Image (cartoon, rainbow, N blue to C red; front, side, top):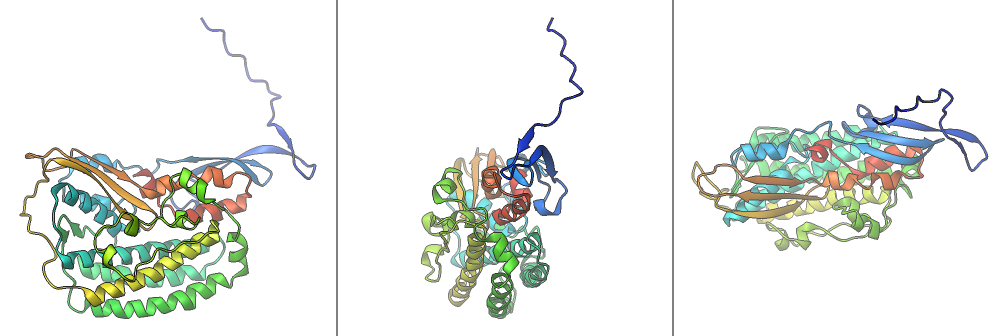
Amino acid sequence: MPAPAEPLSSDLKPPVIESDEGLETEELILNMGPQHPSTHGVLRLVLKLQGEKVIECIPVMGYLHRGLEKIFEWRTFQGGIRYADQADYVSNMLNEHCYAGAMEAIANIEIPRRAEYIRVIADELSRCASHLIWLGTYGLDVGATTPLLYCFRDREEILDMFEELCGSRMNFNYFRPGGVLYDFPPGMLSKLERFLDRFAEHIERDYVELFETNEIFLERTIGVGGIPADVAKQYGLTGPILRASGVDWDLRKDRPYSIYPELKSFASVTSVEGDAYARYKVRLGEMRASVEIIRECIANIPGGAVRARLGHVWKCPKGEAYYTVEGAKGEVGIYMISSGGSAPNPFRAKMRGPSFNNLQILPWLLQGRLVADAVAILGSIDIVLGDVDR
């Protein structure tokens, strides 16, 4: 039999650490979350502190896990689109596009031209809605309240148009294999044009002036949370956080899909500084770019059908595919396997969530930083816990 464990000594104390200033401090374990407003959801960060410096960070995830990939396997091909909404639930249309695209890649479905234009408009509006909720909540992270009100003002208008388009403001269930569920209602494009004019003005007048002239915001973001390009690639980062480190990788041009290769107004937004401020600049630039993309789509949108004729009970043929779109936070991917035959549901559907991959660099980023910087750095990554846990 193994020897009994020795009782813990009552005089054991945390290790004493001498700081650079000659002060003796004790190591402290701090739990930030899972119910903490600065964790952007139900995320728990176990921080090991030396004074006010973070010497180790352990992210604890899984509080929001709902088994979405297993749900995909138990729902019909069309029914799974409704659950793709619940991963990144602030940029839902992009998830739906990815899920529908995987089915179309297996079945080699040709999408009507008008449907492709509608998809791109919905995608870019969804990208703006996601960046707006990030920008407003990031303002709260660094101590500003007013930007949240402005950001939600514009985001509400986008959700109003989505509601008019598909009847919902959050779980849209709008994309279908071969196109989209509904065409634009009468007057929708005119309303959208008027919104774009206001939104473009709000970006320059409200967001740029509020953030870029605020000394506190600049102090808490410039030079904070820097990620070199080689480190960003080693960690597999994608999206704005990668392009803010100087890596010009955007799936809309580097792995083109839909009508993006035809758009003259599209240009990826990059920066080279790699810090929290650069990530802010990239996302702001992406909203400007989305406005121009939507305007070009409105000017050139053709007539015709919005969905391929597949029948009421459609079954995907046998095959497999990995389909990706450039989401608001990075590469959204669906790897789908169809067993064909009479099976009405996928054999397997694996989802790549950009928030999960981007979050893994957080321990590296926080090492040696102050606790106050932990909030600003985490917020700059832009995660959604539904996308992390799934």
